[in-house]
Structures are given as structure tokens and as C-alpha cells.
Image (tube, rainbow, N blue to C red; front, side, top):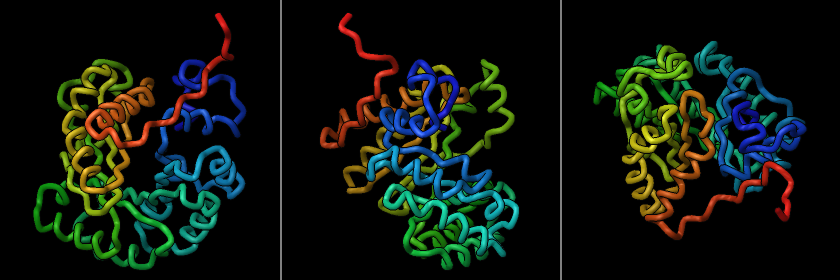
Length: 275
């Protein structure tokens, strides 16, 4: 995500060698979704470069490979999991949580499979699960079944809030594309652990994105006052302003929780001059 084309030369310096791009992104935000790991397990050398470019307090939420979650559906995946865990070892404490995103077809009848998978995971990492089957949101019994399985492994439930995005028809090419690809997920704002993680999808119109996240300001402030450490990811269909919006969200929360640490100062895009 830190190589997003729309940010180059505007939010991040351009051109940048590959071993400097994450460092510049980390000047804007102190966490990142590791979505590329869904498609392929990176090499240890690549992951070591990520560690070198970030402070120990930087948070990676890394998605498990689709071979494990979608193709094998959490079964017979021991070797693929071993390879993945070995590859990300250089991150050390930066691996905030391993993200188990499950397909929409993974429903209540599969919770036992998830529970067995979670029990076998090493305790050296924390885990967070994203589900997309509607029964987990609409059927109280299915909700409880999943929450019990997650609680037994001290795993978090990641909500993907798309309610603001789907409130009205799309108005841009990026929104029209997202309209066909993104899931229509009900709102969920209940944390199971002390490290809740939220994924929020707004609109390409920044004002509408801000309007849609107001409830998350209240929730996040509440979590912080309870002693939790939440991580919030802000998306829009084109993601052109995502780092700016993420900082705006953080500023709104910090205005109500002044003791919250400030975000880092972005690295200048161009050379500093006197005039």
C-alpha cells in the first residue's frame, strides 16, 4: 500500500528506491495493512527491509496468504503457515496482529474449523479474524458461536465498515469499481480484546468520508479511555487522500484524548529551501 501511485510526488517523495518507500509512508501513519501477503508470502530479506524502515512501535497487520484462508480454508495448511511465520519473523514486535480474512462462503458451519486452526497457532503472535458471511451479523446464535471461538484464542474480530460507502450510488470510476467488489457489511463496533482493529471505507468525497466516521470517533475514544489500543485503517475507493484522512481521524480523536501520542511528522516531499 505504501507504493500507491496517487501519493508519489505529492505525499511521498518520488522517485524513491524500494528500500525507502515504506520509511516515507511511516512518516504519515504508524500502521499499515499488509494486504500483499494475501497474494504471496514475501521473502525474509524483503520483510527485514520493512523492519529496517520502521520504528519498533510501527504496526503491521499482515493478512495470511489466500492459500491458507481461501484455497485450503484453514485445513491442511501447516507447511504454508510455517513458511509464512518464518518469513515475517524479522518484524519482531512490529507484527501487531496476523489478519485472518475469511471468504464470504465461510459461515457458521465452519466455526469449528476456525476454532481448531486458532488453537494450533503459536502464542508468539496475536490474531484477528475478518468474516463476511451475513449470518455472523444477522443471527445472534452465529454471532455468539464465533465470539466464543475467538475469545478462546484471545483473537479479535475485525469489522469492515462499508455502511457509509453504500449509503448512496457511486459518483466516480473508482467508486463504481468498488461498488461491484466491496462487500456490504453491517456495522459492528464491539471489541473482544485490548487491541481492536477497524477497517473503514468512506467515499472519494472527503467530507462524506469524515461524516461517515463520526461514530468511530466516539467508539475509539471510548476504547482508549478503557485502556485499549485500537488501530484504525481509513480507506476510500481511490485512496488518494487516505494518509491525510487517517491523520485527520487521529487529530479528531486526540482532541478528545489529549494524552494520545502524536503521529510522526511526514518526511518532506522535496528538498527544504529557504524561499
